[in-house]
Amino acid sequence: MKHPAVVSALILFAVCGTLSVLHAQDSSQSTNTLSGKDSSVTTTNNHRIDYIEFAATDIPATKAFYTSVFGWKFTDYGPDYTSFEDGRISGGFAKAEKIPGNGVLVVIYASELEKTQEAVLRSGGKITKAPFSFPGGRRFHFTDPNGNELSVWSEK
Image 1 (cartoon, one colour):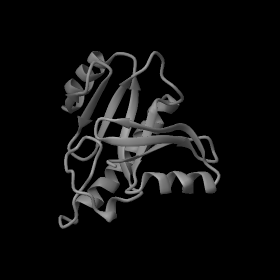
Image 2: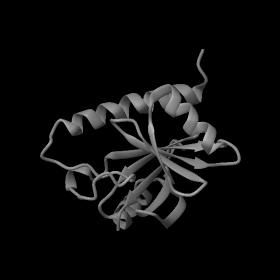
Image 3: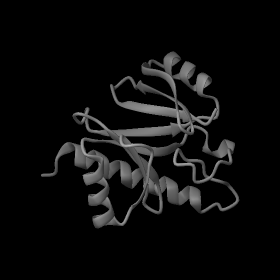
């Protein structure tokens, strides 16, 4: 039997990969990801899964593994963060002393970060990390009523 974190990651990749393929089929609409592949902003991306972030205790070993096994391309943002592109979806690996929870963070895009944060709170979610800046924009983390942690980002 596979480890629950591996199963969660595989499910997320299956779901997010499908969303990316469906979105890519309409070539008249641009994409907008944390990796900065396309800086155009469209309302069609609002509140859609945009990025998957994993925790990693060893960034160089992680990059070597995914490059060797899957041929992923990486862009480093200092020693503690690297982003990847696999051809369908983008994501990243953040340095961590230990892997929290299942180690996967789903990141959703929002054109209006504060309004989305207010909606999370109104709907019973809890903010676990207040909005903060990072290269490329701002984001906050929250838990849903089940305790799943996700993040929302915006370039503004």
